[in-house]
Image (cartoon, rainbow, N blue to C red; front, side, top):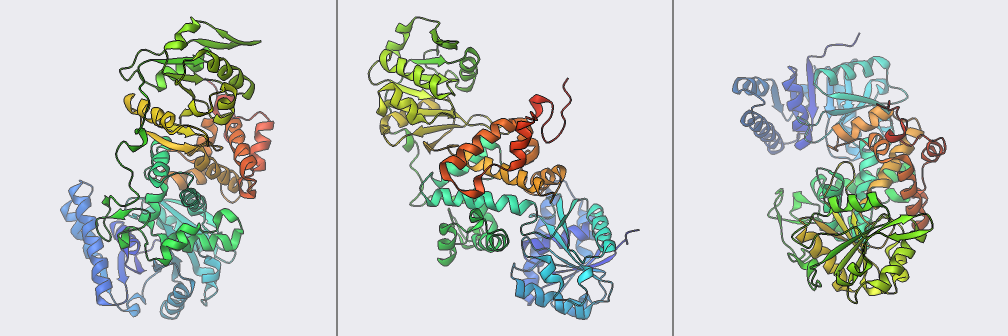
Length: 564
């Protein structure tokens, strides 16, 4: 039977520590909250008072309940006041030596049966545990920010953690109203191991000039439905914190994808740590402000559409009838002449189903469903002959590369990609893809057309995965590797990302929804382009596709999906 704890402590009263103290007090526990110096304690008290005041304003706490919560927390600068605690959570900065020192002090102060819990998000709990005289009673208890809101707690057990300690902490997590996911001691645990590889990849994308910061963030917010873009999230977390977590992950994994992007290192060296300093990837109104203000890197409004060619007539060419119809839904009329389905792919080649002369009047031709190189080359070769000079020809498919279509058309400067990029149920984002030989006016025409249709657009180079898939699918592949290693179950992985990071869908569920064959094709393309070992498709993904377990549509993927 798990112990029912009543007297607990928290060391470290930054945003996270203060939030943990509030969560514990809300569950009816008596809390001693400790930090060094009176100023730090008062800041911690202020965090709790402001957080509970917001909860009252939003109807989540009554005034009397708030008073009770505040009365249960005793603020102190004395570690000795923790001597009677049955469990103490340390929530101090992510530095091994500092955490080890605090745990050693608690080890000397507290009774032998007191549980010492670390809120570390990346450091080895085993290494922390062996700095004490009670390694069996040290455990990881990783909350997510903001602790009063986020429902996940990662309970980290080491090879020497006593089973009863794990039971006690699991029971406490349930009492706090949290979903506890119990895992082994591995750098990053579940959520951060998946999250920070993705964040680092996004930073590298900006560092290399692959895409601009606003486009990268819009890609993941609008294209995948994530609550924040990766660069804005790095600014919120703290770029120095991200660097420390990535360094810990890299020391264990030796995966180059976990080695901090040079831009992260440069920002930390310059002291540009994100919101807390008023500047990171973005600039803010003041330190600790969330208000983004324009800076030298901020794009001019409508700048992507500058120099666009006039578009009055749009024609849709469908390499399959269904693809053409779907495209009409993806691109609303926008006040332009109604798009027309002109052609469809049949055995033996393209069959034109309407008067080909329609092409002569088109300012923009959208090609849907030409996903195979042979089909795309045949369609674009025909368009190159029939479309009027100066018309923009746009592929809406993710494959083949846009430059393949451009070469087949004989109009290298006039061909772009207009790729509807919604994933995970998100809709409405279009990636405007330019090759190295695309005329800037043609790309601008794509942006202007999307704006006229009421659709947000971002700029992407003609690279595998464009922007959305180039960020999304490596993260999904990492989740498969975690599942393959039996580090965590599919349910725990999905819970970590939905409850810990606020994602609309967990990675395993998303893979089943998108189709494992689709994921494998994208991942193979990313690996073929980069030859980066960390981007090689997970063997488990390849095996499931070979076995015909393709996801929800097939009735079975990582999970079984009964067909209706």
